[in-house]
Image (cartoon, rainbow, N blue to C red; front, side, top):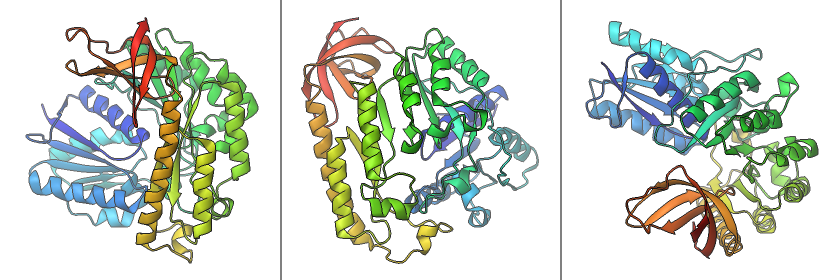
Length: 435
């Protein structure tokens, strides 16, 4: 029996697809290895969102080839799909595939093990592509499970390579969504995280929307929580929010992609909203969900971003009151309009702005965490260190810790009400009040 080891870069969609591939390999007689030592096959599932991510992928490929010269190495994912020419010239990989036709990965590896012929199989996307449903993932070590229900993007933000790496928007059929939710429940999973490349656009081609997928999952016995991945603000209508708010299983944590809090920068990015519209949406969500949190992504150092633009962006972050902000520096992507723009920002300025924005984000997070003290929330416990704390997450995705009073009892995959007593920078502590 051949052993296969996986290395995954990037987003929750990539994590989901890796788990699906693990199932496919297991179904075809392979053994999943938890470490690369002694493995026969190494699968590198790549990301290409930033130049830094590309460098990590290439460095990992070279490291694996040098350390495990006899292993079969397959490079797959977004990097080869978006960078076909440079990928074909990589000497470390025996098999190179993209993001299309993931289900073919097992066959390509099996054929290589039989004939040892180098394979490059990167198929281009077309406008008529449909959603590819893979083998259901196990997420064996998780109490929650991810489910990809959407792929691709039609937005073409000026900085983003993802439409070239993932193709156009396409959605999963509701019957398939229901089937995987039922499978997750049978495995004892209580929480499902719905993910996609542009999740808010789910169902557009079928005349349905994200609320339909949420309602289908909530109807499955055993599924007690549904969480949403990253959302684009322009598709969050009043009707959608009203329907979502009627689903008690939906966790009121909204990752609303912002990118910049400056209208001039948003326009240059080809984002399809301005700060006033974004703020109005936040207020609408707060109307429908009284106990909700907002997380987001903020880019600094976009081409021609002035000091004034940057200050506006920081002030807007303060205004919203995010519970968490992922701050990242603009990274040039060959083939995107932003790469050809004038006014490219020097790296030292990007680094300085990033540090300032992170401080602003931390203050916002600390303020939000303090606001939770005294509240009672439902916590799904995920893991424990019995000499220290039981750990789990509240519906708003706040990490909650309670002291281990009984080192022999595990709270894993159990839901308890917890009263929050203290806040810290990245978590809150409390006590269980009842089950």
